[in-house]
Image (cartoon, rainbow, N blue to C red):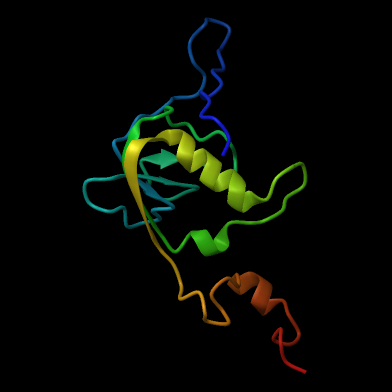
Length: 136
């Protein structure tokens, strides 16, 4: 596991931070339009409290600030590879999650049943396929 590191601070010409760094105690990852009550949501768009692409590391969240995380139906959409990434996106995501969570924090993930043949298929990948994988 990589050590926890701080979010790099960027500054404007007047010395003020260009990126707002948040410190939610409860974080709803990929909250979409339905942030869990009592949590701050982070998502790429919509009504989230923190608008940020979760594939862009670091997240604008203070190191060791989050006590509780919920994440519903996002894990199966984490891309494994993108141009410029040296590591699998799965590990990048969980390293960043580890960075923002306090010691003894909890994280609850809801995802499709892993034994389902469609558990980790992105619908866009499936839709662009001419035949279903695993069939002849």
